[in-house]
Image 1 (tube, rainbow, N blue to C red):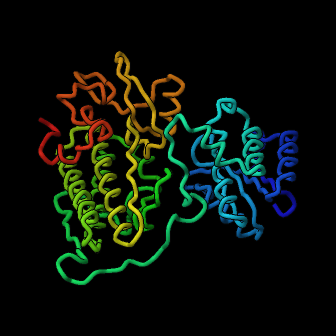
Image 2: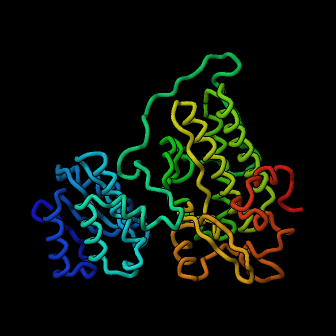
Image 3: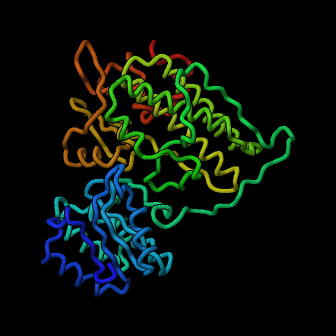
Length: 397
């Protein structure tokens, strides 16, 4: 890349043929901001599996500031990060890379066209404005400054209160009875991709967790769910939070209740929907814990982001969609992952989590609500009292 600002891995050469590469290069040269394009496969467990990792390494080795674009690890998306320039320019670059994904005219467009559109937006300083326009109808959360631009807020150290009854509260919780040894060093959940304030670095779990869960059979998923509950319990056990503020205390109570509910569901789980529910409850507890710790450390509360409505094993919801279940006139406003949201927009059936009724596989939300807590609550998206319902014994009535 010292000779050319475009690098294309041989395996991706057909996606950016020579003619289109020259057109892209011409646009890049007209940009007032130096632009580099790095196209390599992002493969879990491979050399490069994260766009931020890739772009950071390339920038550090080149030693040249500017905007760097790559493929994202979400299908059909681009990722970008800018070094140097103003904070507004850096923000514009992050937005610009995401715009083509949301444009109808870019649907199924060649990679070269999507790159050219992103480069044009970077050059014109229109990334943020075009992103807002393209996603206004989705209720889509804006990308956080943490994505490629450093965390939002400061990294100030935690102030610990004195031992006055309302100050530092060490939480001691056992994880006995779950039957699975905790994995040493396992952090909390997954890297957040929505527009929320990032959780502290200790509150992250590699993104392979849910990808592994999607491929797991019931027994494997049960073991994985147990590991996550144990890891959450250990994190709570190690947590030392100044809970003198009422809101911090309330959030810590939410985290503890979610932990207890997750263990309760795990003990009684009868199949994949229940095991997915364990992960949902752990996720809710981790959201509450991250918010409590952020507030206690002088930061902001971090709004929770539920897992995908159609299948929690898909991971974080990213888009709010209006969806009408088959055979119903009522439209529901739910949050879904990228792929499920695209399916709804295209009037296709999302890849939903299935339950079994009388030996038949049916979407979990089509099970009689009297028989399924998950159908009644949409894994907490249709009602906000999921944790309380579990704790009072509504799982299997």
